[in-house]
Length: 434
Image (cartoon, rainbow, N blue to C red):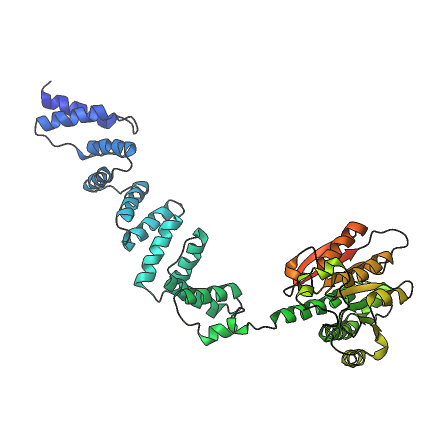
């Protein structure tokens, strides 16, 4: 058999091999023999050889490109998985080639594959760059960047957020984020955005804390009426009467709106009980109070913190409640509390006594006389005064009560800038109220 016939036989034998049984050594030996005789390498066999190389070296872009040329020469279609592989190479080398990315996505979808988030983001950035009016692409890019936790250029994020707040004006989070993005860019917040923002620096004012105190007291009264907590509403320390009037207004409002709840729970009509000396603070008589910062500097000296007279306070609360529903108890707490009738129960206690001793007098009387209902709201107005030291004031008084009586309670947290609230609980034993 001559050399040509021998080569033809080798070519035929290799072509007859089933797919997957090709050996690179046999193919390369044949190609060397063909080249030695100046003969062309058959494209179908070179394709087999190149496929073996691609399988062994999937990152070899030159070999992959050669495979595509061989397929084209033979009029064959490029397999989707190989086209995907090649397009991935191109997309990495030419990240601004939108056409390549879009073709890659098409090929991946044909194979039922998910498009990688980073590549879809890359394509969306290009679309937004070339078509800045494409709102859908911009919003998709915004959502995708958030999903991946990636930062978006401020100007693009601003555009996307403007679209969101335009279409969803109730979206407070997006509105706030838009304000932040505008500020980061040194831009003024437009009036129409500023007016809708839930956070506006122009809204800040010195009375925000006082408003929070009023709101907390108001809602505490609603809690007492709405949840069936037995007992009267009491304030210890009235001074200017602001908080007393809030309590009075709340009682009038919720006594009417939620009075059915009291009837359902069999709760007797409630009174507003206001305790004050009406001559200011007493002299500090304990070392704890004498060493307290506010006492030492004179802010809480004897006879300071005097406000309305009892008559003025009565008229103020009379704007909201009938006179028979308001009881004003004038005198030092240590002297007036023991005069209350047996069985007195409080459903809300607001202690605004400033001094440790005054707060202690109220709390000790309450716990010694079982004078609080299950669920009683206990609010301390001056909790964090004296630099929030646990050694002074209302903080100290409460810690002693906890050590002495071991009450069950829920700490409901701070309000205002120095105040704190609690809910008192009663174990279900015979003879305890609530």
